[in-house]
Amino acid sequence: MTTSITSPADAINLALTRFGYKGRRVGNLFDGSDAASTALDIYGQTRDAMQRDNDYGFCERNVSLTLLKQAPVAGYFPPNPWSGTTNPPPPWFYEYAYPDDCLKIRSIKPVPLFVQNYDPRPIVFTVENDKYYTPPRRVILCDVADAMAVYTGRVTDPTTWDVSFAEAFCDALGRRLAPTLANLDAAKFQAAIEGIQTKNAAETEG
Image (cartoon, rainbow, N blue to C red; front, side, top):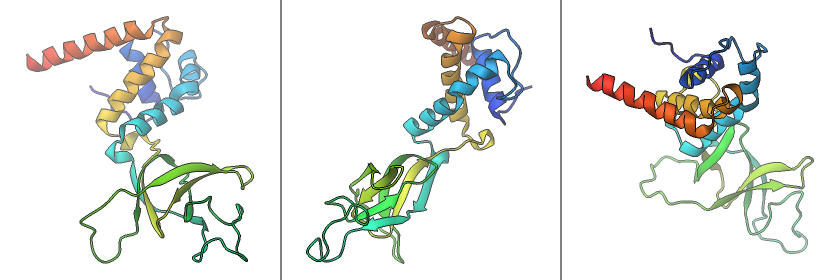
C-alpha cells in the first residue's frame, strides 16, 4: 500500500528508502536517531530552497503589504530634509515590511479597485535591509502606494504539498542525506534514482 506524506518523518523515510538506507526508520525529526539527527540539520533549508527556486502554485501568496515609511509628497526640501529613520532611501517613495513567511517576492502590484486591470505591467522594486532599525530589518522598496506582493510563501505542512514538489523534495533530501548516512556520493545516488525512475516507467508501460 502506498504511504502518503503527511509529516516530516514520512518525507525523510521516503528519502532514505530512495538510496537503500538500512538503518532504523525515523519516528519524528527529534527522535535522536542518526537519520533524524542528520535530517534535522538540512530539512528546513532544503524545503525552503526547493519552494523558493521553483515557484510552485501551492506556495503562492497575494498579500497587502504593511507600510513602514514613505517619502513626503512635496519632496525633500527644507524644512523636510531626508531622514533614514522616517523615509525610505532615495529614489524610492515607499518602504514596506517584508512578509515573515516570504521566501521570494515574485511581483509587486497595486491593490485592485473596482475595475479589473487587463493591461498589467511589471513594477520595479527591490529588497534591502534597512539598517535604521535595530536589528536591521528586511524591507521592500517600490513606488506603488497601497502595494500588494505576490510571493512564494513557506509551506511547512506536508499534507498541503503538491505531489510533484513532494517527489522533488524527497529526491533532493536523499541526495543530501546519502553521503553521511550511507557513504554514497551524489553521483551514485542520482544513478540509483534514475534506475528507479526507469524501472517505474517500464512497469507503467507494461
